[in-house]
Length: 467
Image 1 (cartoon, rainbow, N blue to C red):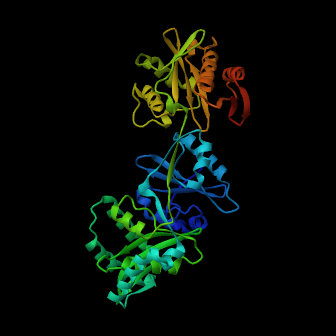
Image 2: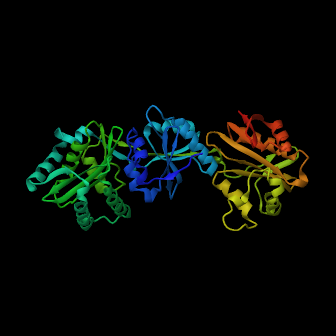
Image 3: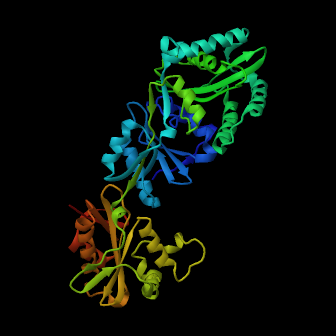
């Protein structure tokens, strides 16, 4: 099982081992972005089969992964995705990928039969040919060259140079003046400036590329980037707007100084800001890098209500309010439910109430995590069948339990067989799994009548049925 560690600067050597060779190009696949936005996304990392796995935490979408980053010639992306799937099943969340490179979208869509896919224009990254920004050559860049020529005439003593750790006071002076002229009211823009100011403190680290435009000892513009694969990812580009032409001069000078041997320069997204979009388009991007959000869904996504299933003697349907007392008795029967392999106390948040189990079942169905069938003999509640642990690749697990006074009459087998048939041919699963403890003879006999053995470990016997 993946074990995640919150990202911090102390992990820079390990993380840069992956990011420095990453070919995805998007700014989210860089150490600078992870550090700059860590208070917002709370990213965590794990290593899996030669791949870096990043788990982000979205206030809106919940747990969201980056696509695994393999070490060239070593990483097994499919095995890393298997580990992500296992973590998601264990934690009861769907596999969700917040920023999928265009090149990997098809792989995820083949992996997960049901997905929701979208790509927000506001978050697409701007990619430029490194040679274009380094030279501004050709008629199409005449406007940028004119701005730079005017800058040279107005400020002939201004120079570009790399930043060093000796420039900390000058950088702080720059930020103080920048805040005086910064006039955006958008909260996201203000937060970005605060995060950028913090990231600039990393000047001097070996992987950080930083530069400035200086005039008579005063910084007019600053920039910070890192190389990831064949792309220079620019995290910070800030200038004092009262110095006309400083931005194009900084862009060209910084590109020329730090893009040697690289193909692309990623100047990141515009976050929907009109001014930024206009500016970034004026530099003539070669293309916009799409950030594709892929949310895996399971077969329950199209199910609005719990269906009614019939057998010769039984009815399986949704839990009702009047089932509360017998359902609680079933769920609270510790002696019997040791065979269920689950103790509700492990997940109980607060104190138990008489509505707890009914609420959990309904919430799980609402969130498309499970479907709980009440098993009825006539109108009498006698047990439940639960389809759960969806793997989002066409598989799920089925369990069944019967109240003790109704055991020994074949009701469990009858209900299990009907729920299994519906799961495979009604819901459309490819694979159905089940398990029981070695010493649970009754469950083993039932599962042997309904499914095929699929292995064992020190605790469980496993069964499955495929179609």
